[in-house]
Length: 469
Image 1 (cartoon, rainbow, N blue to C red):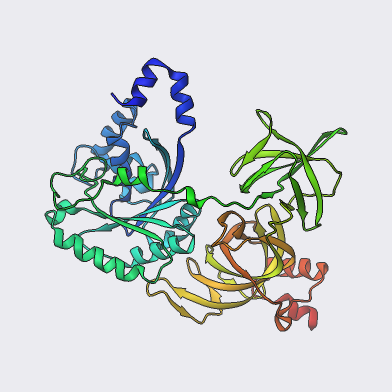
Image 2 (image 1 turned 120 degrees about the vertical axis):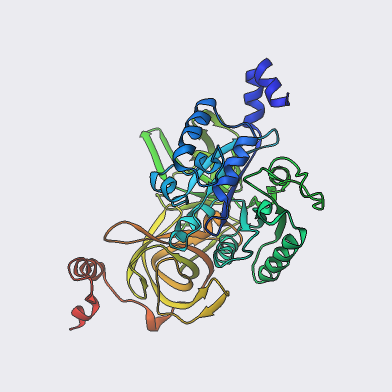
C-alpha cells in the first residue's frame, strides 16, 4: 500500500491536510492529430488508479461502440467526452482532467491536434507550467508538432517533455527514437524553451508512462510520470506584488475593501502600497479572506484589502508596492493569437482587457505575421483565424502591465469584439512603444459609438469615411 492509501484508511483528516499542501502542476498535452494525446491521459489515469469502478464500466461499454484502437478498453474515451469526438476518434475541445500522486496534484489540459482548433490549444496552454508534446514514432516531427511547440514557447511555457509515442508500432527501435530526437532538437533551437526532455513511450501498451518499460532497456531515463513528479516549477513564481482590483466591497459605511486575486508576489498587513494609475499611497490595514483575516497573502489567493487611508481606487486599478511599479502606457507592442473568423484589421476598435482593466483600443500596425511552420516573419495587413503576429496597439486609457516574458499574469490580455462581446484574440505584451502620431485615431466618444453602429448595420463600410465625407 502507498502512503496515501495508508492515510486514507487510518486518518482521513491527515490525508486531506497532506493532500491540500501538495504542489499543483498544470500541464498540457498537444501534438498532431492521432498522435495519442487522449490515450496517454487515459493511461496516466488508469495506471495511477484514478478511475472509479462505475466510470470504468461505462467506458468498457462505450469501447464496444466507439473503439478506435482494436483493444477491449479504449483509454481515449476517458477524456474524449463529446459525441462528435467519440464518433470521429479525435479531440475537438479542450478537456480538463485532475489526478494526484504522492508528490503532486495535477490538472491536465488535453487539446485538439487539428489546425482549425489551434485557438483551443492556445487557450489550454495559457495557464500551464509544462507541455507534453506527443510525436508519432511512425511519422516523426509534423507541421502541427512545430505549430504547437511555437505556441507553447510564445505563451511562456518553459518546461517541455517530448513524448515519442507508438514505439510499439516501430518495434521499439532505438534508432527511430534517436532520429526524431535529433530532428526536434534542431527545430527547437529557434524557440525560447529552457528545459526540453525526451521519453519514448507507448500510451496504448503503457511503456514508460507510469512504469519503466521492459521493451526499451536502451532508454536510461525516467518514465513520464516520474518526470512530471520531479520537474522543478517553483522558479516560475514572481516576486513583485500585483493585485488587480476586481470589485470594491462596500457592504456598509464602516467597511471599504478592494477585492481581487493576487497575480504575483505577496502582501502583509502594514505594507505600504500604491494604487495605479492614481499614484496614491497608503498602508494595508487588514487582509480579509473567506476564512477570516490573515497577516500575509500569496500569489493565487483571493483576498480583500482594507487600507488605513481613504483613497480613490476603482475596478480595473492595480495595487502594487511603490518600489515595484509595472509599466504604464497607452501604446504597446504585443504578440497576438487571432481566434475569430473575421480577420484582425488595422484601426478597427476593440475592447482590450488587461486583467480587470478594460478599455477601447485598436491596432495601429501589424509588424509581421509569423509562419509557425518555419518561424519566418512575413509582412501582413491583417491576421486571419489561428494566425499569429506582432502588432502595435493604442488604447484610450493607460494600462498597467509587466512584459509577458517576465510575468504571464499581468502581461496577458484578451481582445473583445465591441458588437458581439465575443473574445476574438489573445495577446502577450512585449514592451511599451512610442505613440505613432500618423496612425493615431482622433475619434471622440460619439464618433466611436457611431462607428460601431455603422459597422453593425453596414459591416463593409468605414465610418470614418462617412464622418469626413
